[in-house]
Image 1: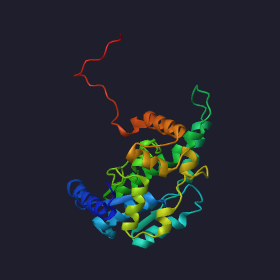
Image 2: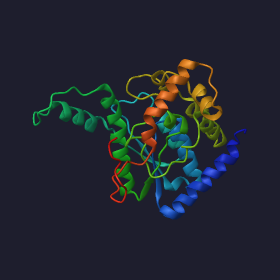
Image 3: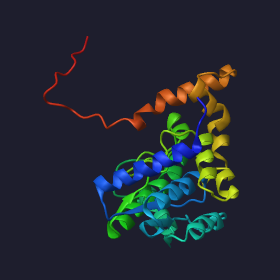
Image 4: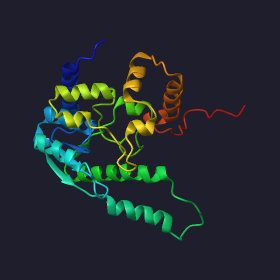
Length: 256
């Protein structure tokens, strides 16, 4: 079925309005602005749904952000209120506290992946701090393609109070962005992790075009890429599920 971006945009806008009708009639949408397509499109949808006065952008560089001009382009494009919170000091302090403490009996090195994931977790803490102070609801900006292969940080960018893009692939998000009238440079900006200098596709090992087609059609001609995507999907499905919890009313499965 052909994707109708205009119709889908209208449906998402109405869905956002319904969410706030139930979960905070007078609340604001608080969103982390990275300057990439996902936060830009999510912001555009919230502005259309709620009006620009109820959308608040939070820019969170980790030290010097080379492409912060893209984030500023977005907030100025919609003329929304925003704040810039630099997370470098708490980021550096947390790393130092973990590796520099002598009040433990563990000997370990902090992993590269830990360093990468710490930044989005600090950003999410910042978003909730701003949101709680400004009567807000935090926007999750993940899309289906990233979620499919676990390309998000649990309790970091994977968190939020409502998620307008989670059923859309990267290509569909871009089409929605065009329907919203966003500047092309915001829609087409190559996404990166913001720390290693690599693009998302470099880190993943396949293109979003290939992934999107596989998600929507189940067809992929590259066997090696198929196995990689399937493996990532299988290993990261837990990120999309509720936390397992012990239920005292259910029997515990006995060992065989």
